[in-house]
Image (cartoon, rainbow, N blue to C red; front, top):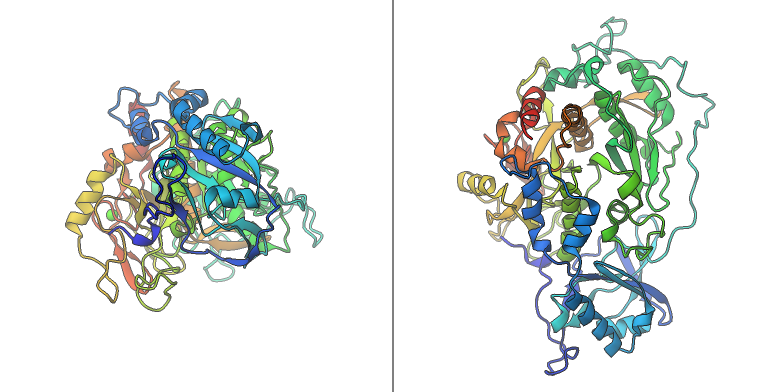
Length: 635
Ligand SMILES: [Ca+2]
């Protein structure tokens, strides 16, 4: 099923006059859901809007092909990743596209002298709300975010000349809420010490019990090696035992010149807390006290760590502790971002309007991380609902993730923690549906076919942790997100798996009216691709030992595994693994298949796990020795 509310391509003809290339306008994008924003008053007509026109890129439809060529194990170009310059040149908008859009602007009395920057794929100009409304046949309103009071200018829909439909991807700010029109000015500096007077982690003996669930007084042994309580508290020793991950003493430090082995993405102000990392490292690892990540601030976003805001800390503490314990002595860095847009702008200058065109980017930030701070593996534990954006917007952003893959970056994204959704939509009314079966929520960027989506598993209680032991999809605390995109098609490397899944498990999950609640066309991108334990990691946060569950834990765990494989390949003078999905789908035997558990949600039972790929746990969990052997055998 192709869910209709995302369709933005209906040709609403506003002006049927033929002849002039700019006289026939058609609907270009329309937002159907307001995603937590409330419309207020009309934007004053003299408000200056930094408009950004995303030009259609050449050969964008070949992203999957290009990506497959450097990522498929049978390709003769496997591992031959592109440079940033090659990527920018390959996808640059054509001269015809640039000329056609400029002609439209001139026709509307907008001088091309007002175009501030143009590089490859974007045009930018400052324009009054009055002129923008005339240009796009729309009305701008001020919107306020219900959660945090931020203000944005946006319209419900906008139009462009029909002849330009193929030349323009999308225009901002219009219907998308991810694009700021004003930069936040209040930024807090990160704190280095908590307010309660504790002086820091080094030399401090954190309280811990190697077996938190054992009877008080039980001496369970060294928490760095103890495996007796893994079903309740998953430590680094537990996951090493579970996935056959090498002992830290055997891991070589990579040649780290200009290299970031793992990057963890956090949305500001979320931040790890230094003494929490110290506590975790001292209890569970041999990582020296004082080992903290460097912060790569994207567009001025800063972490803010304070024990009085524990929710700020928990996510980032878990991400860093879980991944760093696996990859040490190699480094994990923090990418502090305000939006996925700015992250991609910073990593790939061709996504920007070049020298500062992005309304949310400073000139220095645009493309800045591409040269000096390019990660081998990047883990994103944050998700958004696909319905929060238009499909044009998502496709453009997803292609950027594909370009990162072409350049050798592994992008991992958590698949979500609420099964098939807790923000479901009534198929008849289009409204949120919390009580009756609703359309399944699809999580982005996990649904982008050019990232590797990571689901969650657990080891059932009383099962000893050992390599290859049977894991299940968890049904308490965390439910693994998964399903099928309503925007993205299955790429070549995944399509046979999707068709086999729908052929073998074709029974529909339907709503009251008999409609399928998910895209069961057999052609849609399914997710997750891989999974890993997402249950009860033992972390330190807020100076206490706490359980951490979620695909937020699974994604940095897989990041650690991939980074170790990169280390082995780099030691052989080979390239990093880059985009891993074509290898995973060609070699599912390198993962532990999960066949028990499901992912209920939207007042349904959700999907079940199956033999082989399933939309709960993907192809399965890491079998490190098998993964390393395969990737070491590839060129
Ligand atoms: Ca399975």
